Length: 70
Image (cartoon, rainbow, N blue to C red; front, side, top):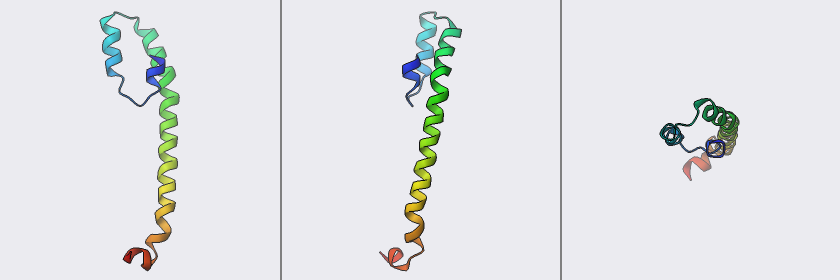
């Protein structure tokens, strides 16, 4: 649960599988949240960095008439 929850893939199938094998829900949730909190924080950080970098790339050329005509 922990390793799969680190990825950005959907985790609903893991909860279905945990229910089918009658796993203990507190353990499943502990592994899920232990991985999901840092993983989501990482993806939010990456997204913020990406959008701020893209904004800087396009902010200069858009004000320049040569780039607009190009």
